Amino acid sequence: MRDQEVIEQITHLAGVAIERKLTQEVLRRSEAYLAEAQKLAHMSSWVWEVTGRNALYVSEEWYRVSGFDSSGGTPNWAEQLERVHHEDRVAFQAKIDRAIAEKSDYDVEFRIVLPRGPIRFIRSVGHPVLGPSGESLQFLAVEIDVTDSRQAEEERERLRQQLAHLAHLDRVSTIGELTASLAHEIMQPIGAAVTNAEACLRLISRDQPDVVEAREAALEMTRDGRRAADVIDRVRSLYQKGSPQKEFVDVSEVIREMVGMLSDEASKYSVTMRTDLAEGLPKVIVDRVQLQQALMNLMLNGIEAMRETAGELSIKSERAEDGQLMVSVTDTGIGLPAGDVDRIFSAFVTTKSQGTGLGLAITRSIIESHGGSIRAFANSGPGATFQFTLPGRVALSA
Image 1: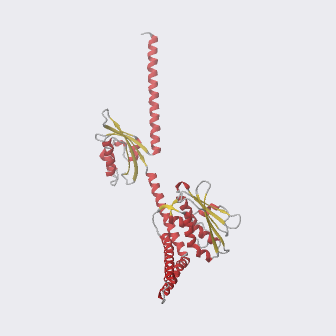
Image 2: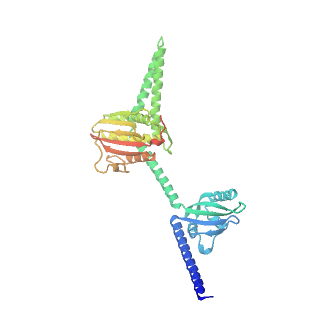
Image 3: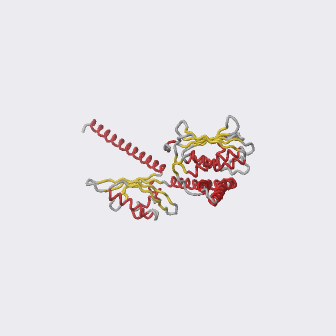
């Protein structure tokens, strides 16, 4: 072989060796990046065969998430299944069996119990690898540690329940404060019903019974009884405690209900209530009791602002320019505190000597939980306006 050919051969072999080394370096770097990415995402991958269900490939992160020691070798299927929480084991096994039988993907969430006791929430997604004849040979699976998100979700639910409990306590406390006014409102129709009943008895006890007038008195008595029952139903609904029950609600109708309920409270402080309710507004999907509470809090807040000066409380419903339903509660009272106006919606912030500081915070939570927003601003004259919106996208035309 000529010297030139030898040199060319050596050069070629050297080039192949260098290329192979570079390829291996790129591969190692890629594997390192993949391992780091899986660690950051709390995600692992593995491949297992259908026959025997033994692992063919397991990523390093899989060992960490599952709590196994990689130096001890890959655990078999029985060892892995033993680590699944006993309450989730049957459902987990059923999902895997169905995926094998149907040659389909699986997506299952379950808990695993680590050796030292802590529990992790795992989401496993698998995809079948089919053979030439269409049989399931293997499954390529990805497992994600969703413990943090699940615990955060449980914490949000716990906070939501606590807020609902506080809202119920605030509602009951407010109704307690309004007991005298509500008793007066209930006694009015009851007193009228008694008067009409007595008149009816007199009319039919005459020598010549006046049936027409007696019938009219009986009808009035029925109407009075229904009016008293309506008041009791409104109060009872506000006392109730339970999960939100969303339904289509006419907001203007709820405003009229709350005006009726709070009319005596307003009269006590010489406050005049006025409504300006637009016609043909959409109904919105809300929890009726929660909307009643939000309106009651805002209306009582306005009445409280005028208890020393009297004045007018105006409640207005209309459709905003963006199609949302908008409600405004305006008073002519002492106005808003100086400084950060939005702070009044924070919990335990109050300007009242006997206030809990929860009313406006709960009101904002109620409105925002229904996809709306609330704000407060000073009037050009005396007093302040509280205005909230509810999204038109959940509305049906009335």
